[in-house]
Image 1 (cartoon, rainbow, N blue to C red):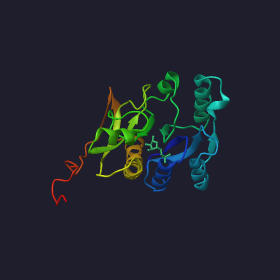
Image 2 (cartoon, protein in one colour):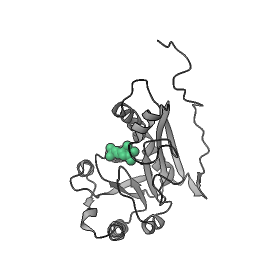
Image 3 (spheres, protein in one colour):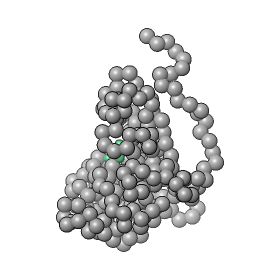
Length: 222
Ligand code: GRF
């Protein structure tokens, strides 16, 4: 097997997607290893997850910097010093400057809890419920300067259930996120997919499922 790609993960909080990546990367045939976790928030729960897995961590607190540029430069210096080849945002709640985004272009992934380009931004699940959408999901994409924008690597569709709350919907989508992110990182790290123009191409396998119906097509409706 060729050398595993050295991955850095950026977090701001809970780190459950980070955990999914850590767990996936334990498989001997996984093409990436998580070698550094950086949080912009001191004490973020994800830092403890990384430490428990023996992964080096670092806090770069955005509040310690006079400008976004200075913060991003510190981030970039740390990532470069650690020999990071691929970068994953996992609940990282900072917008990055154009210079940083350009430098990491097509090597920088993000996960967002909706079927992009629908429902970009914050409070995704509340807005999905407000709209009465019947299907939502999650997306892993390459980062561009605009928020939640960029070539889409992989998506999972998730049904909205009658009576869902923001919390119940978030929990169902999160389960899909934990499967999707390791899957997408595998595709990128193994070199199966690549960016061409605004699209990610190279995947030849198709999904076995043709459609998700919500409400379901069959069954009783009482
Ligand atoms: C996830 O829903 C992710 O899609 C979004 O922020 C949340 C982070 O959760 N960007 P966690 O920190 O990975 O548990």
